[in-house]
Every structure is written in C-alpha cells, then in structure tokens.
Amino acid sequence: MSYQTKILDDSPSSIKQAAEIIRAGDIVGIPTETVYGLAADAFNENAVRKIFAAKGRPADNPLIVHISRMDMFFRAAKELPEEALRCAERFWPGPLTMVLPKSEALPYVTSGGLQTVGIRMPSHPAARALIEQADTPLAAPSANLSGKPSPTSAAHVFEDMNGRIPAIIDGGECRAGVESTVICFENGAARILRPGRVTAEMLRSALGRVIIDDGVLHAVDDSAPAASPGMKYKHYSPKAEVYVINSTAERFREYAKEHTGALCLVFEPSDAPDGAEFICIGKSGEEQANRLFAALREADERGAKTVLARCPQKSGVGLAVYNRLIRAAAFREITL
Ligand code: TXA
Ligand code: MG
Image (cartoon, rainbow, N blue to C red; front, side, top):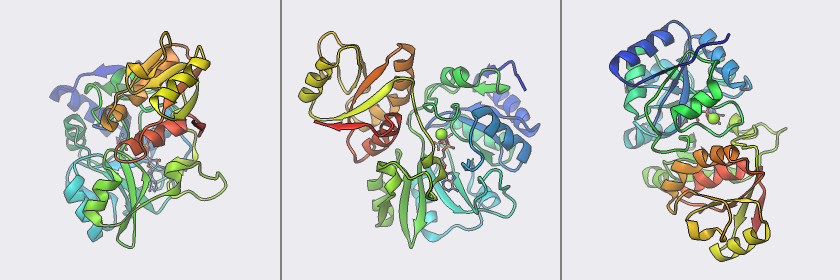
C-alpha cells in the first residue's frame, strides 16, 4: 500500500491521532530516546506484518516490545526473574532490552518465531504517551529500511519510509543515538547481545557478572544459530566503503593523507589531514553514539566512495559505537 506520509508533532492531539492509527491496525514512526522506531500493536498480527513489509525485514528477526508501565510487562512476557527485576528497577525507563520467555498471548510474528521476547520500557515522553493512549504494548524495530543506519531524527525516518507508512511523530533528535542494549540472562549473569548506552560496566555493577557475546565484536557465522538473530544480518551499511582504522591520531592522519579522496570520520577536526573532507563525531563515547548514524547518512549524501573512520574505544559507551561502526565497515578493520 502507498501512503501520503504525514509528519505529526508530539502534542497531545497528535499523540491521540497516532494512537488511533495504531488501534486501527496500522503503523507509526515514533521517537524514542535511542533511535526512531516503527510501532504497531504487538498483539495485532496483521499490523506487525506491516512493519516487516515496510522495513523489508526478514521474518525471523524478532521485534522489541515496548511497555510504559510494569503492569503491562506480563502481557508480553511470561516471567520476571529476580535479576531482570533488578535491571528493570535500575535501568527502566531507559535504553535496556531484556530477552525473556514470551507470554502465550504474544504472537509468534512479533517474536520472529521464538519462545522469547525482547522487552523494554522507553523513557521518551512521546513514546510513553503513545503506549498509554494506545493502551497496548507496541512492537517497534528501528525505523530504517532493513540494512540502513538507524534513524535518529524524523527526517531520517521520512527518507526511508516516505510512502510506506501513514505517519511519523516528530519528537526531535534522539538523545542516545544508538539502539538499546540487548541482554539475555544465563545463571544470573547478563549476556550482552547488543551493546548500548546501558554499558557492560553498568550491568556489572547491578548484577555482578556480565558476558559479552562473541557477536558483539566479531562477525557471526550465517549458518550457526545466533543468540540474537539481528546479528546475522547486514547492518548500518552506507553506500560508501567504510574502513575502521585502529591507530593513534597521528598515524590516522598519515594514512588518510596517502588515501586522498577518502572522507574521514573523526573525533575532532585535527584528526583529519589538511584539505581532507571530514565529519566529526566527538571525543566522548556519548557524543560519538549520538552522532554516528547521522554521520553515516551524511557520508552518503556527500557522495563519499570511501570512508576512513577512527576506531572508537571498545569499552563503556564506546563499545556500542564500535559494534555499529564495525558492521557499517563489514568488519574491515585496519590496525596501524
Ligand atoms: O533502541 C532500540 O532498541 C530500538 C527502539 C526503537 O526501541 N529498537 C531496535 O529494534 O533497535 P531492532 O528491531 O532494530 O533491533 C532489535 C534487536 C535485533 O537485533 C533483534 O534480533 C534483537 O534485538 N532481539 C529482539 N528480540 C529478541 C529475542 N527474543 N531474542 C534475541 N534477540 C532479540
Ligand atoms: Mg534495527
């Protein structure tokens, strides 16, 4: 179906309009504190199918279910183990998704055929208000076309979804800029399937033990069953060929000087050699997370053929930035 995609503001009357679209079984682009999502009633199979169609997403890649209050939790999930409760108390509302056994009522279309569901309580006021108004947990993946960088503004969603969805709520730019941390539990420890703003260090302080899944730092083998199906698909890929350069700023500059014409993705302007085109994403992990996806989209807009990116730190929020960037680079990392 082709739509005239409307951009709504985040006023109460617009939220009400969006809730009506959801209740009528259609989908809406929504802001969250991490990235924009494509939301539908998690219990309406037809509506959820429209999400997969709009994104071009493989049916075995499960959606995250968003709740606004703890009393919605058991509509989507079957149990709340003690360690999950501890995480909920500490990190919700916020950018943490927990993978837990799904409720009987939650359709398999939503869980990508799995017995588990990824569940999170977002903190963005417009997302929360919409869940309240629609009075149902919302299934919502990131609102990009499958394989593209996640959208961090309503304009990005429009770029990818114009004509494919009825409406987008414009709630401004996303603060976090990378998607939520996804974890599952193993004997009381958290296993990080996708790193985000709730860092390994924060989870360790809440739970004691944290395991970082192999898929966070390395390519997963397509033929093996992945702990998180999303990890096996191509991700965040701009049109340009991206290379992650693991080196000092000085060595990076020299390398970039030898590769004229490449666009440099750097932490600060002085990282780029004189005369080179560059995009700056900031020095802290938080700034880098906030700007990375917009920078990848900008690289495409500028027509970059090659992007040389400085390598983020592999700890703290930097781990989330590295995880996205290395996928955008199809795991091309050069250590100098
Ligand atoms: O911040 C976010 O999480 C955003 C906003 C909109 O909430 N959503 C998001 O959804 O990033 P999506 O669908 O783009 O990414 C969800 C990831 C995928 O890699 C998926 O495979 C994984 O979470 N996931 C979801 N449910 C799962 C489950 N039951 N078991 C394992 N992995 C799961
Ligand atoms: Mg996504």
